[in-house]
Length: 261
Image (cartoon, rainbow, N blue to C red; front, top):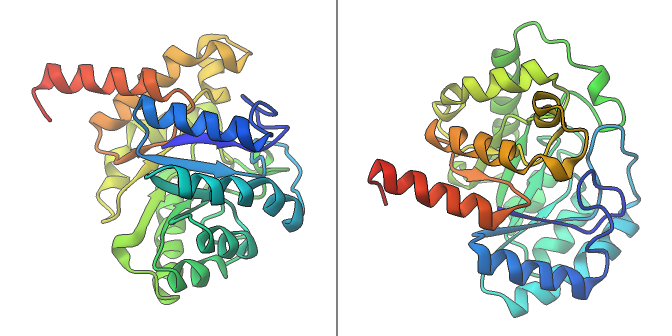
């Protein structure tokens, strides 16, 4: 899953693809590099970020989704927690919603996904981006995240989303400390046993910077790729990344070493 941020304030590439033409060029590059899914977002969800209005988010993502759905033969995902944005995006070419709130902000997103027979990624978060890093206390980390994700999946299915259209994501960096993020990665098999495909996004996140002593996101490529490879070996199905080419090269190399297709 290749990332296209239509935002001025994303932690890594904020402002780089605000222009629709630049975004389309980015999409073309990601597909050429090997992306299977393009995830287009119009609201930053980095820790501490403020939300944007529905109108502003729509203005950012809809023109790009419309154009991309015509120009490219690929799966387009919209990264949103808003039902109105999900509805518009699914109506103009997207076939997946990536909801970092796991339906906890606007459960109505599930109904929009159901109506379009689309897929949905349900991500665990402890709170909204503004204060989620202040809420990193769990009674038991993995069971708490598991319960959240299973409840989110049940909400989606109750709204009519087929089970095989649901993907879960334990939410690296969304209300977790570095040590908690590492524990999630160490125990990814437990999420893979829940009966849903698992998506994971570690790309250039701050926990990698803390491990490496790299305050700049630009310095976290190798750590990001390492985390992807370990995650794939543990059984996850989708990796959400900024650097598709390098990630694909690493995955192909590991597959060749292990002798798998």
